[in-house]
Amino acid sequence: MVARESPLTIILNNQELVTLLCSPKDLDYLAVGFLFSEGLLESKEEVKKITVDEQRGIARIETGEDKALANELIFKRFITSGCGRGASFYSAADTQKQTRVESGMKISTGEILSLVRDFQHHSEVYRATGGVHSAALCDNRNILVFKEDIGRHNAIDKIFGECLLKDIPTGERVIITSGRISSEILLKVARRSIPVIVSKSAPTNLGVKLANDLGITLLGFARGKRLNAYTYDWRIVNDGK
Image 1 (tube, rainbow, N blue to C red):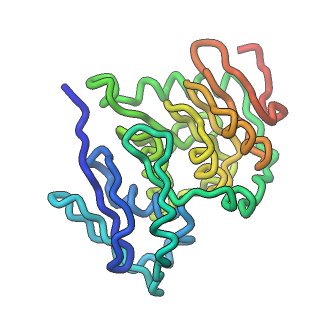
Image 2 (cartoon, rainbow, N blue to C red):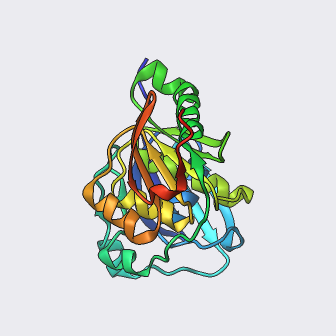
């Protein structure tokens, strides 16, 4: 058993935007989530039509207003640090424009570690192939949305695409990811106003800096009965579990 990998070309209003390497599932969610994460969509109401051709690997998104893309945006495409050759239109200016996440949410260590255990058991494709990343949107007790993809960025964008199209709230929620938390992952989470991100893996130094700047609680190496808190640990209640 091996993980499937396919290209997906995203076309926004008849203008080819980017080709992602991804797992060929939930492609509509991936396309919408990617556009939202990159600031090219702001709400479900903007989306007029979604057409996915799975055979050719093309997702077409039409919006109510023509979002003409400037040439400088296309050439600003940035290859991220992720597997699956993630791409974004990330720049230093994005971090300055992003508003801080203001949330009084608290969650206990026992709740976090319980969610991580459930998270690990959700990943059927990973258990079969060892070749994908996982991501989940959770409340304090339950996994609400779970996605897998060969790229850690894609798995998170699939979650946000489903949340956008199904009106699933993301405020006062937790994101769990199997991959490392780098700056572009942190920005995706900040754009959905999510106050807590947890990983089984490590953060990067810029990921930690952005979490600190944007008011997000960042937890890494959440495994077994321990975890590392890097920023805003006041949201974490130590219940001895």
